[in-house]
Length: 80
Image (tube, rainbow, N blue to C red; front, side, top):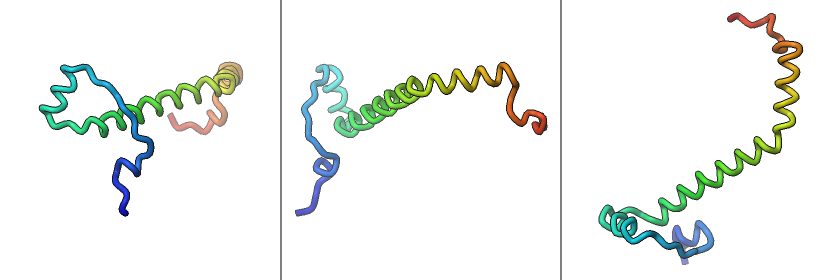
């Protein structure tokens, strides 16, 4: 039996929408599950990026301190 998109994406979940939003989505024939997937993917990516920044904050601070103290590495080769 061929897999459907729903099975391809994984776990099926239930979600609630505010009634006015649900009515408008129906009227506009919006694919709510696709919109939710897109929004959730953006949310997960933003949280991953934030976590990466927090995990690497010490390295950023160290690099910035180096540049403040010693200038940019190889700056003598910059053409601007």
